[in-house]
Length: 321
Image (cartoon, rainbow, N blue to C red; front, side, top):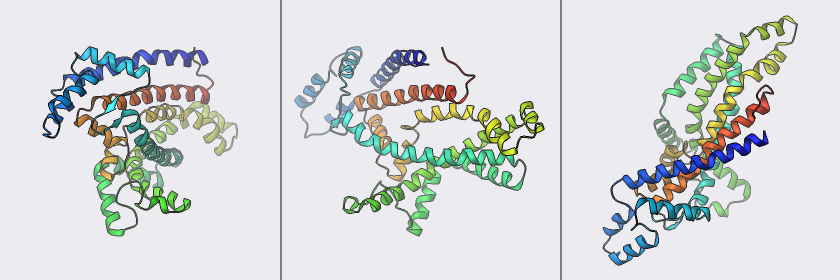
């Protein structure tokens, strides 16, 4: 396993380089750049713009610019964000934690409910409870996230039970520790429900299907014929085989921690990386786009590796060489 992990990490390096190169070239192919917007500001002189272009090598061909960006990246210098007026590393660092909190909250909400609910529906197939939760799943899958977010925000505006946006109150720093935690949790409620609902509905259906397929297998019939308790048959024999595809999906969901919450962050006003990434693309803030892309690529490759490791840990039949 150690050799396999090292090999996967080494393979990831050229993959990240290829992803970064393609992204950089696509940005360069778009007409204009961030300095074209600066030229529209009469308070910024042309000499100042030329100094910036020279400092960050925008006066050179695209390949040369990529070379200098890669050279800076080796020194862990992600460049400077012109739209945020701050180093890219600082922008990502301040916003990444907020996005991580939201994504982790949504993942816990989704997986801690979807897995037990899928098992319950499979065991109680075609009963009223199964049909009821299956109907809710179809509704959850059919509602667009942005529309569901607006419905929840409208309900919150009428009832006043939950905040309408942001991450914390204006006087957050003055509150005691318990109320600080409660403040963040109440602000988390709406974006967590929005992100988690559609994912929960899909995962519950997948888990139900996996369990039904395994419960029809011959070895499950044999286990029941031997007199094993239904609890032991379901949770010791059936679940261990039905959970494997879910582990793979879990690995892919790790890669979506940064991008999956982007639209919800923008609608609910959560100060995460999603709104920053959108602003970076729209303003052609190339260094911030590259930094966000690089982090997304690392999450994607890391999520796949974590999924493979978890599969080998959960199923001894799976071995990597």
